[in-house]
Length: 161
Length: 224
Image (tube, rainbow over all chains, first blue to last red; front, side, top):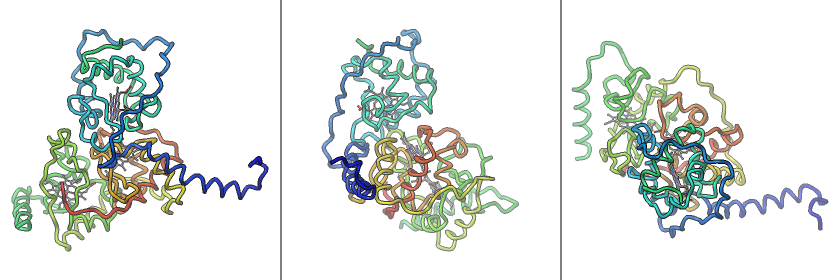
């Protein structure tokens, strides 16, 4: 039976009956973590299609991160990723998905600079990562985000392969 | 024993008070040893949340209660403390006021406002059941506010990140209009926040604000 031909009130009631449980189910994807809940591995999203567009120009590789970039990382990122980028910031134990360890080359080698840039600018949810990684695109300009990507490359002592 | 400590602290501040010749808010209570009571005070000396807009931000009933029975709102400590990012908060309890002093201080604090902040922006009607679930998803998933702030989980427990102030009891503590101002224009209240800037549409802003106002967990005793 085509539900659209039915009178509206029933549809609305149906929507309400379905909405509750559905939304509750969605909550399992939320970011807060129960103390005794098993820590799920970060979901492995399908590999994002490699961007056709050329990666935005990065500053010369040899240049170490400026004091300003380090300070930006300490101010915004360290609360979750930790003072040394090891993924153990003060919020880490309360998150369903642990913050990335920015010193881990094995993982970060598999991500392009563009992918890291997008995750920072648009947040985890927009790039198939956990929502606990906030979007910083309204807080930090592109230049700052590029500099943070370079700093993360410095922390992991790795480049994309 | 605890009380004695508080009295000693209190006497300590009194002694350190500069002799002021005109009546300031909270005169002689020593609050400005840690808090800024005026926007003109240099931010460098800030050891605790700014109070010069306390009347815009905090509910008076909450103030009266908090000043007599302070609770931890920032489990990781205040962000200027040296141990903040290290997870080593300053464990000293907040000064405690008598009922009489708490009422007087709350009166003074309620009068501390920024000029010209509009009010009446928030529908204080509780969210519907469905509306609340939707708003909870905004808070816990879409915008991951919970990554840095405590909310209330399905079992009624305070849960969430600790780099931002706990919001588990925010409905008893914060004024709705101020939440809107904070989410729209945080720069009015802080030179530089650790919280991401969000560009929220009016609908989302209203939903998040009403959700935060629905969080009314009674606080625990002072614990760190």
